[in-house]
Amino acid sequence: EAQVTQNPRYLITVTGKKLTVTCSQNMNHEYMSWYRQDPGLGLRQIYYSMNVEVTDKGDVPEGYKVSRKEKRNFPLILESPSPNQTSLYFCASSLSGAREQYFGPGTRLTVT
Amino acid sequence: KNEVEQSPQNLTAQEGEFITINCSYSVGISALHWLQQHPGGGIVSLFMLSSGKKKHGRLIATINIQEKHSSLHITASHPRDSAVYICAVRRGSNYKLTFGKGTLLTVNP
Image (tube, rainbow over all chains, first blue to last red; front, side, top):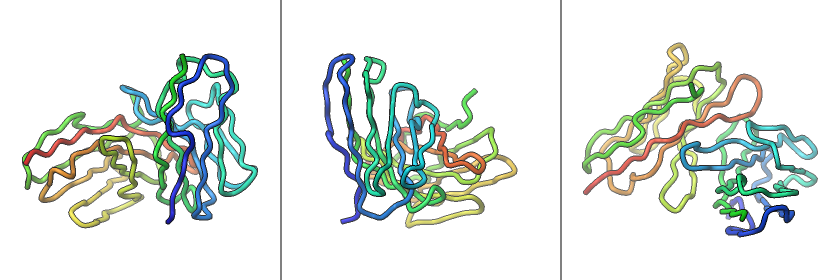
């Protein structure tokens, strides 16, 4: 089954404790992206990747890192999480940046 | 002012009604996406368009590039159409997406 998977789905952590949210797709898509969704602000793009080893900032990259060492994986790294990074995070992929996107199920992160 | 504005923010309809959700944007774009998010959070892409009109089942999306405006129409609405509908634009030649805040649609039986 073609899908985008994210892990974990739910995470509660404390300020400053490094964490990684994994994203994987099995559709051989070149483009992958991370978004966060907050009440009243909607969805906002954090980082995106056009292909392996090619990443670029979205509108809200501060406090996040990404890497794209393999085509199928695009992890989101929070090296020192803060409470303002409490949010619902979505990973998405598409055949290219110019095609429709397939979204993962979301990761709900709470930083206390 | 947000680069992408949706209207209305909330919409309640009776089953069977024709629904229109609007999206206006203020920047040059290369494509516009319509997404659907059901309660519980999952997001599904409905349409991606850069000109004209697309139709899938009871859903129709149109875009007017000159007027910087897109509409999503739902014909013969059904309670299962109840969801948040989100418009997103791809700006120029890069692959960033900017999103509207969404329209919450409730269709009552």
